[in-house]
Length: 108
Image (cartoon, rainbow, N blue to C red; front, side, top):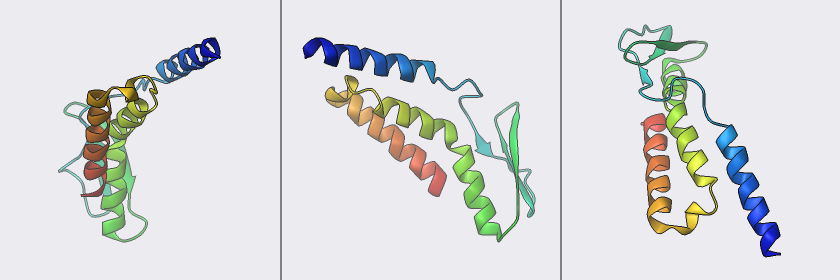
């Protein structure tokens, strides 16, 4: 039984390690050069994407914030997928803090 648990936990680590995000990882923000019909998601030196308005302006802004928070949301979810590390209270608190920061970025 213990051997089975160890194998499953090893498999979880392999799977989550192989699912690493290969795009631009940090610094996604809503550009100040956006217009009322589109918003650009950018880093300091790269445009990530442009979100176009189909509905009301608040919806466009909300969609752009969610997209801009994607790397942080992914990082927090990946941390929460490590069952061994979640037994460590410091790791768990860090994962929860990252998750809350990503949620705040997406919703405020």
